[in-house]
Image 1 (cartoon, rainbow, N blue to C red):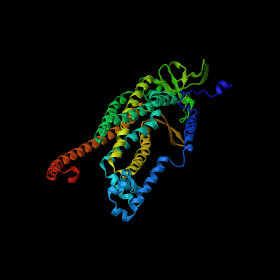
Image 2 (image 1 turned 180 degrees about the horizontal axis):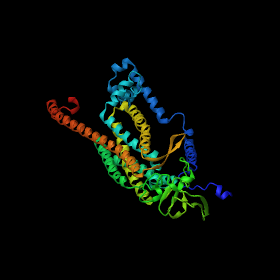
Image 3 (image 1 turned 45 degrees about the vertical axis):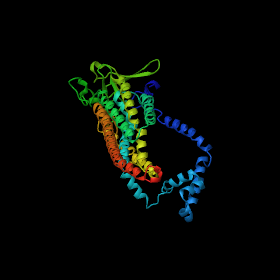
Image 4 (image 1 turned 90 degrees about the horizontal axis):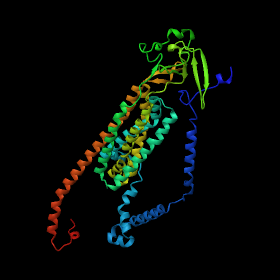
Length: 454
């Protein structure tokens, strides 16, 4: 036979198409290498950092002398080093306690974890990171299977819609916090509002998708199409391999066969077009009226729904990322000044351990339960060839909905705790106000407020 019949005629729509998957990694690695060049131009010591180190040595030199500790009053310290020296002395415990010893670290770690605001915000971020990890890992595959589009087109849509929406959400969240001058209660309310809207726009995703098309031998519906029986009599003489996979589609009935052999085809024809060649299989005994079948999987009738689906996903991602800046501000404002660095480290540790590591495994296991036809390798499951699209959509979107609900619950608890703390602070302030006024009256009208030492 000539090269036309023996050559590989795969197209990007063929499920066996792999493509240059490594090319994207090379481009990304080159971009990272170019972005790292400016780091080689940095000085050995930053000017600001050098001044701060000199100032710390000056503060420590003043406070290390026992005689100076006893004799120097705030006024003398102000004369010796100015007001900045007094500020440095006030901040000195934060500077010195940052060097945690092995005996101090467990106590500070336990103290940080017992903080309710910190713990609830971190748990909500764990839920959001679990959602993001599952979406980033399996969304291209989900779109490819659900809407019968190519992997390149799915990744192109995600890059054009989802990632810009994430950036917009983070920036808008930071702008709202700055322009509205949001305090802890305002940041908690903004986080809760963003997640509630994200949860609301996730509901239509359960109903936007394509059902599985009919596959001979897998979706058994003999009443609708007589050629869907598992290994019908028309192909018994073909001895088709059970592990073969070369899908073909009958355009007239939209029935897909695992291989041309399962369709009972005996000949192959290649037709050249303007930009590509099409492969047909003819003399198919298992196809109605003996129509020729086209190489490749059947196209979906609802591929146009992929854009509205991804628009809703992008909108939900933007609303979820709206909580990024205010939630981070809640962590920084909720812990002590000397524990902020440790709190941020604990936060990212929990995100890695509780979200980014187990979430892809959970999503992958849920997706595997929707498989209806596995390819075998050495008698073991290797790769899933066909999924139940309705079940795939419900379980994938259901997992996303579950994590979003967990984040909403955590932010609701954060807002409740913040309001309770704010209420207690106001009550304490209102109780102390009469005592302050009475002390000012007792101090006498001629005395200055600072002389009364209230």
